[in-house]
Length: 228
Ligand code: SAM
Image (cartoon, rainbow, N blue to C red):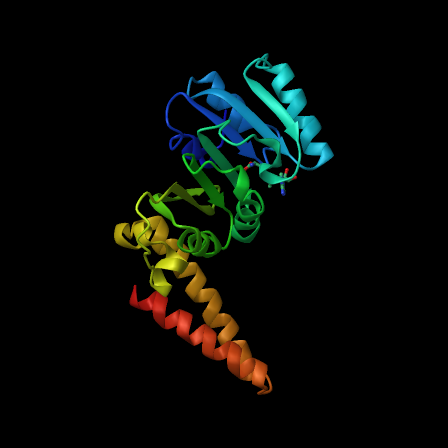
C-alpha cells in the first residue's frame, strides 16, 4: 500500500501518462502508478546507489520490468526530452527540487505536467514558477502521521504574460490561501508558534546587527501569516 502522501501525488498524474519519478528511492510511486493503470510507462530515476538498487529490486519483485525503467543519474539526466508527459518529484526540500528543475531545464519539452511534493520550503518552487513562466494549476495540503505535506502541480504558461505572487502567496501558496482549510491552518499555526518562540529567545539575547535583522524578518513573517 502506498502512503497517503504519494497516493495524493498520483491523483494529479493525467491518466495514461508516461511518467518519470525523480528521486524515486524504492520506486513505490512508479510501480503503483503502472499497476493501477494511472501511468502507461514509468521511469524511476535515482542518483544514489543504495536507493537505485532498492528500485531495481522493487520493480523486479513486482514483475513490472516491461513498464518501469529504473535509471541511475542526477535529476532529469535520466530522461530524454519528450519521453514523458508527467514528472513527479517528492519527498525532498523545495530548494533541491527547484535546483533539479533548473539543472535539467533543457530536458523539459514544457508540455509536461510537474507534480511536486516538497517536504519543506515550497516557496522556492513558487519562485521558480514565476521566474520560468510555469503556472501553479493546483495545490493540496495533507496530513499523514502528524506530518503536513504540500503538493504543487505545475504546467507551462502558454501565454507569455508575466504574473506575480504576493509575498504571502509565495510563502503559503495562492490556492492554499484561498482554500484556507484546517490542515493549512494547523501548519501555519505551528509555524507561528515556532517563530514566536525564536523571536522571544532573540529578544533575550544580546543585540547585534544580525539579531536585529533576524527579529525584523521574523516580525514581518509573523504579521504576514497572522493577516492571512
Ligand atoms: N520520492 C520518494 C518519496 O517521496 O518517498 C523518496 C524520497 S527520498 C527522501 C529522496 C530521494 O531522492 C533519495 O533516495 C535520494 O537519493 C534522491 N535524490 C536526491 N537528489 C537527487 C537527484 N539530484 N537526482 C536523483 N535523485 C535524487
